[in-house]
Length: 462
Ligand SMILES: [Zn+2]
Image (cartoon, rainbow, N blue to C red; front, side, top):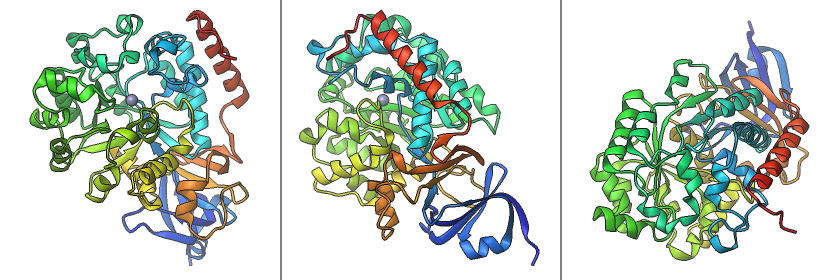
């Protein structure tokens, strides 16, 4: 039998494909040619079929599609250790909005490089940045240098401020000076990152995001939706984040937020609404009828106390067919590796446990759909991009090899990633970046955070 050539054959693995049938090949293999997957299948058959330039022996470990973080304010990762609680305004050394505004381009580059390396080491190959980078060019360079994928939008597009009364930590003079609350600015920057999509091979792509949570007029909301649809990209916005936001929204608009978005005609299957923490019954109906997608940030769900304030609906929504993806929001007190565990624990606290297979859907194929890239990413299938993660068979949390879905969703944290391919290239091998000096990146981000704290007059807490 003639063998076919391929670049990389990953063999001797438990391959969790996340294809439509949720096939698991064990022992399985994945063949990669260029930037794409040729085939995922049985180990014996693929070894027969392919002659590989390089063979990666997974030694029986789990191999899975790269995870996608559907909502990650990448620079907020450098807020670690600065705040106990960003909403405890009186106890803060500086307002969170002032910290956001107090970054230079060098700070954003250092933060992005660090968080990107960390995400690879947590098994993530892509993140969606929700429009909170001031210098997207500097950040994109770092994402590409590390070898990840990302989706970028223009920063902080807004034209109303009333709902900040429910979220005072998120508003400050310094932030509003950098990104004014201004309709003309917001409308003119909607498509600012879409030029990236002209290159089909680009690792960093653009989409349309407005800040949301009541900070957009109907004109801005509809302008953003039109721009997204004309350019074939998702529209994303935050909505129903904090307690109190919904009341202010209703007072201004005379109707609940999701119902209003539905009435404005902007909720459809390519619109992705982030948070959905506190919805009334009419808003639940608007989500279901419209077919819009949701991104859930379960760690924020805990830190805002939503667990105490609302009945838990995410598992129900998922069962009803609403596409729910997961996002870390700001990785202040965690890494993205804890996302599925947090979602599981929140669902347990809400008496409606999300099983491992649902969590993995949220972290893979639903994340790809939130990026508008479900035909390219999110599963290990022929023709899709080769964004593949090989776990280590020796790491903590990887045994017993009895229920791989349970292990992958809940017990295998950041220390279990051995090798990562993005776009067919090995960007992490034996847990280390093949492209960048991680110590240099770590030192640069520490220097950046220390200097920013000094500039802003933040005293380090003992
Ligand atoms: Zn956010």
